[in-house]
Image 1 (cartoon, one colour):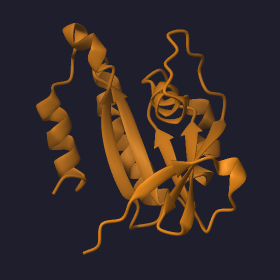
Image 2: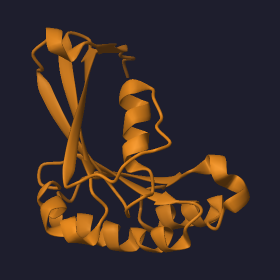
Image 3: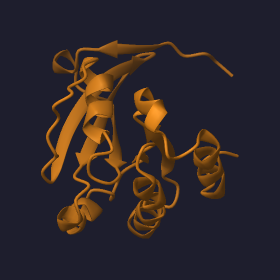
Length: 158
């Protein structure tokens, strides 16, 4: 198997050869937008506001001579936006499911997010489970082992 060098490039200078869609889901306040901001801009905001509906961020990569545009859809976690966010699963190649390690109910609700993804998305969608807010470990309510067990039961970890 060949090794490919993956290089991040300025997306404004290149037309993509491929476009890949990912969605980030989870309850309100688990830190979905901060995960995205850290990845896209390497920044973190303590005073983050709740996402309204959907927000889109992109990142461009070059692998060999091909440009790949990664579209990441940050979804609102509030129940009132459920009907809107379900439509954004269509065509997604992956989903990042996020829970807050200090709030057990957000961890339990991952089962609902997982079911919604399975009902609304492509069957071969790649899934990632993230327990967020590890900087608040002294307030942890969900153990790392519980997260690993849930991911294993969902078929994310094999």
